[in-house]
Image (cartoon, rainbow, N blue to C red; front, side, top):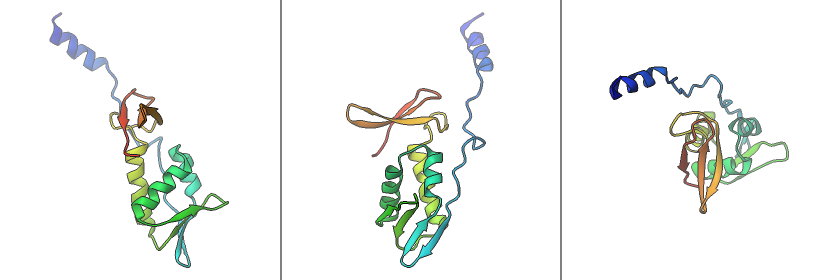
Amino acid sequence: MDYDEQLDRAIEATPEIEGTSDRFDVPDPDVRQEGNATVYENFQDTVDRLGRDDEHVMKYLQDDLGTSGHIDESGRARLTGEFSERRIDEAIGEYTEEFVLCDECGLPDTRFEREQGVLVLRCEACGARSATSS
C-alpha cells in the first residue's frame, strides 16, 4: 500500500470534529430599562454557561458598548445607558467567538492560561492554543 492509499484510508477512518450548537447554547439576554440604565437580568446565567469570570465578561461588555456598569448583589449586570436585547446579544456573541469557542475545532471546551505573560485560550478538546486580545 503506497502513501496516498494509506493517507486516504486514515482520512476515511478519522471522525469529523464538528462544533455544533447542540450542546452549547448561550441564553438570550433578558434586558429591561430602569431609568437611564439597562439591567441584564440573566447575566449570571450567561456567564455560568460561558464558563468565564463575570468580571471579564462585564469588562468586555463595557468596552464593546462604550459604557460603564457594575454587577449588582443579585448577579445582574447594570449598564449605564439604553441598550437593546439585540445589541447585548451581539456583544455576547462576539465575546463567545473571541474568548470561548476554539478557533480550530469550534468547540467551547476552552480555558484561559497564561504563557509568558500572554493570555492564551487553550482548547481541551483538540489541544489548540490561540492568543487572545485581553
